[in-house]
Image (tube, rainbow, N blue to C red; front, side, top):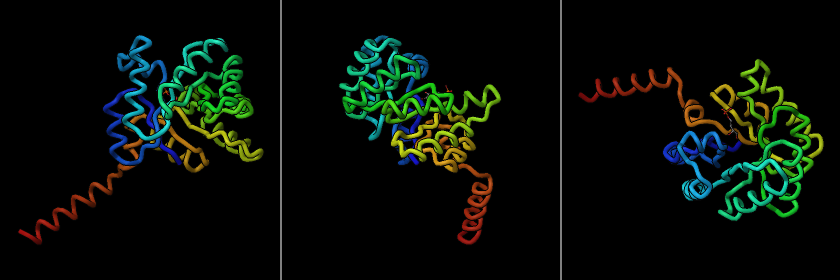
Length: 218
Ligand code: E4P
């Protein structure tokens, strides 16, 4: 299972990378804006900085919503760095753009996936990744894990090579459930990734070991 971090914050990316478990980065226009990264050139430069920090795939999202615009933008993004994966929204023009990029050998991440039908269509178009947003489904009281399970079943039934990139992951439970269901990748914030290493009994156990060592050696 691959771990991606879902942020444009260079400090968080470096911290996750230093842990030695990071396989890539996902961003979106909201995450860029949150870091104050605005203006076309500034945004492109930021993608390059992320690629230089991490040895893995970096999803860069197009802003256009028409086929020609997505193609022009996506080609520019893909030319930035070999690690760039062009992130395309699940809309009609986006499906056409995914097919176009797939034919050209440019990798894509189909974003804003909320149904198994959308994931099936993206795979048919040749997407490298699909991003089902499980946290946002949870937000509307819909079980995001059912979606991961359905997509896994469909992809396995037909041998689709498109990777399931569980997105909008918010916590440790999301990561564990995705792992149990066979999601290929998760992307979440640093807090969710670091959350995996925490257990109160670990902290208590370590404190006891260190105290006992001190007693024996003082
Ligand atoms: C996916 O690639 C998106 O960037 C992201 O996971 C959305 O997460 P959110 O619902 O926490 O904003």
